[in-house]
Length: 273
Image (cartoon, rainbow, N blue to C red; front, side, top):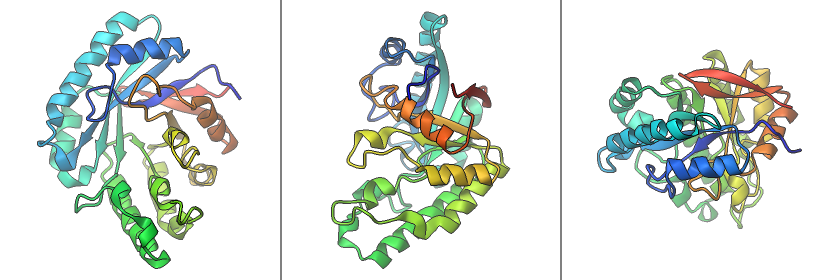
């Protein structure tokens, strides 16, 4: 189903290490694709905060958002955001940068283990089923500790391991082995009034699906979760807004009648048409 009211809650500009296009170019493409707004959620990875000069990148991202707002104020909502990766690796700097800038939305994610390995760098095809389960349990315990940190609005990439565990050699491996701790994560989000992100970026990869699967969205709703964001995870103009309608439909299928974007760190509901 095509949805008219589409807001992309997760977009990276060239202020992110892998970002390609400027905020201004992203705005032009967003208007072209009929979005009514998007959130610039440029990266701030706390495990490489100084090395990658994220403080400077964040300041530049904020400046670019304000500049774009002056041009597109009549045609787009442009949220000023940040995606804080691995916040537990440097909580002091994470809190400081979040508290010192006027963000609309703060997303939290974990894409690496504390030893610096990316989830994408683990060759799961060489591991036994028990070894994979141990990796997943370790990851979700880390994610649970992250949501207890609380200085964020949206949890991004709840089921990120699915993108890598489901390899060609093990295409049907299920993360359901970790459902108990995933339920604890979702319960904590619901109790704290945080949002869960639906991310469409895996539609553009080998997995070819929207994450998290609908069963986890339903679990979140049954645990009292109220707020869902939908984002493309785009790093370029070519991907902004991609598969948002499909993501919104999945949210609706899970029993939600709305999703949201954030303004001054408060959720603004968007009714699903």
